[in-house]
Length: 180
Image (tube, rainbow, N blue to C red):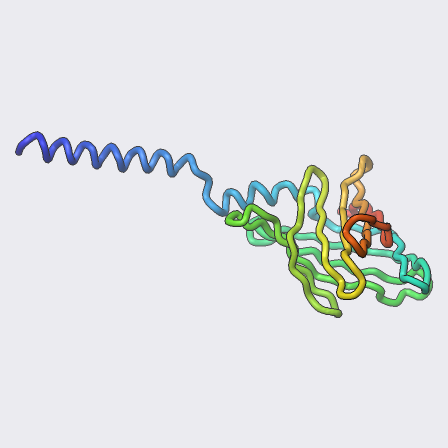
């Protein structure tokens, strides 16, 4: 056997080892998803509290709210189920189901929500103790919701509306305490 084939075999073997070592240093897509989703671990649990919503000329309405957040698929997806009841008569004023996930290809969190009025999908912005998403409401403007874990560990959420994306006015506020 000549030295050329030995050299080629040695070079090929070295290339395979280098590629394997480099690949081992790169996190997989699922590892990236899990790492990003861990930012929302504080959110998982059963929450209960109160809030208000400004309903145009009908005025401000107060409600009680429950939210159940579960991590599914080994932490890759959060499932959020909310139910709001009017304080005055106990009627349902809000019911929704949402899914939050991280898309490693787009480097973005996704918010996909369902209500009796329809569904929407948008980008979610996740920070330290915060989760924000927004949606466009035809003929009314932009709605933005921001959930923050406050200094008491509570879920504090506000909803704001803007017709021109510059001036925002608060139309919703809710504070929930973790039950378990």
